[in-house]
Image 1 (spheres, rainbow, N blue to C red):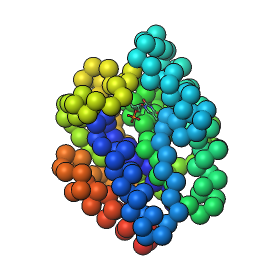
Image 2 (cartoon, rainbow, N blue to C red):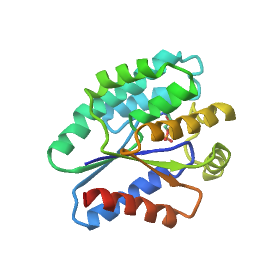
Image 3 (spheres, rainbow, N blue to C red):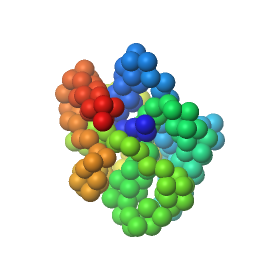
Image 4 (cartoon, rainbow, N blue to C red):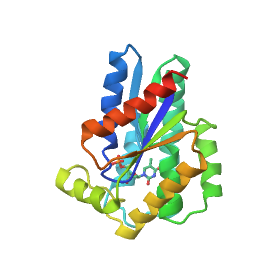
Length: 205
Ligand code: TMP
């Protein structure tokens, strides 16, 4: 089973993904926890270029192709082999991030992004996408006080992050069978309980 986490900045995805992985391992599942951009040695090198705040001149198409290149390596080297071995793969971000950030955020045509994504992933799609919702105001506030990595996209203006969030909500409406939307405003344990109940229901079907 291939599970992805999506959400705006500061939604708490990495923590939720880690807690889910721990819980599934306790249930006896073999779990691979990974992330994008990155997830492989080559992908991690691409991540450095993508997130370098000094790379202000990066063209939108370069950005798309770099995220997609990281994803191509990730799908080939890590995700597909793990799924073939019967493991559960949990990825903190995947192709829907490209649709939300480069599509809705930057205004690049979704049809072009879908074509590039299909080439990068050879059509590999998640079975379940867990979207952790948070307002951009609250998410960016959390990022600032959290003191974690402040990347090139975090530095985009508020209206960019607002477009990303509404894009996510639209994507979720387009494929309701794949997406589960969870309110990320509450305490970590409350959000995790909602995540586990969604995954439990999927594993039983
Ligand atoms: P994160 O690891 O903190 O979630 O940061 C990843 C950043 O990269 C975040 O700002 C979203 C952005 N991103 C894209 O713009 N497009 C993509 O395809 C992916 C995977 C991430």
